[in-house]
Length: 312
Image (cartoon, rainbow, N blue to C red; front, side):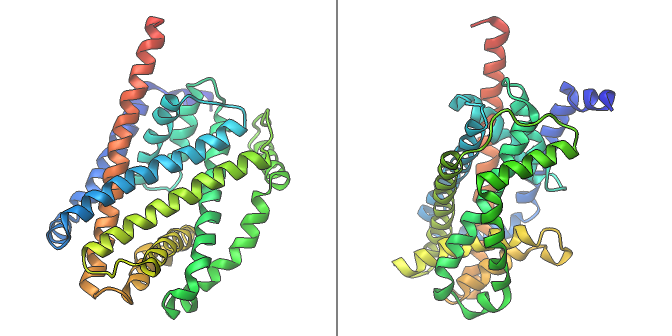
């Protein structure tokens, strides 16, 4: 087993993984290029540019949530070190399997004087926080959303009390300890605190707002009325789309559910063609943001390794 781990952690394997992740992220755009070009032609240029900026902000805010959890567990990374680990790990989302971003974060975090179990725990907690934040925002706007949302996906809110209970530090620390024992890993040196979890949740809610505003900007760019109700609908609708998609990831029928929910949410305020444009462009700008920031993370990581090797 040790030999296998040594091979997986070797430089060629890591480089190959990053190239694969980057290639799949680019392929996600290229595979729908005709649709992307058509959508771009039907959207106001200012809306696309603003959506890209908001997508970059969204990714950076999720990074700050992860950094807050990691700091609470005892690893206080500098901003550049945080970026070099987290931004690169996000490319792992495009590799089939659903866990590679967590694996990448664990490997990257271990290179900054932090054990892998701490990085994995921080990423797992950050994902759970995203789920809680998303469901909370979605719950707030369900009364204003099309009735089809509550009828078809209202069951997702049943998970909210359960996940909230799990995220309470006394419960969460016990669960993390149990999982580490089951995997025969040493326990965490520092327990999560209410303050640390609360700070991370605040960053998470801010990230969901940025993502929802991104969708709203694109929707306005293709004809949606620019007012407060539609803004709140887009914020809550996108958060719900992600949350429900996460909850059904273990069920085959869950494939594409995020796009379905977003289309239903926007359907009452946009024509069918406009809905399709927003769904396509939202995914496009988020993918571009992941790739661009992932490349930034690679550059930062390389510079840090160079400085360590030269003693600068």
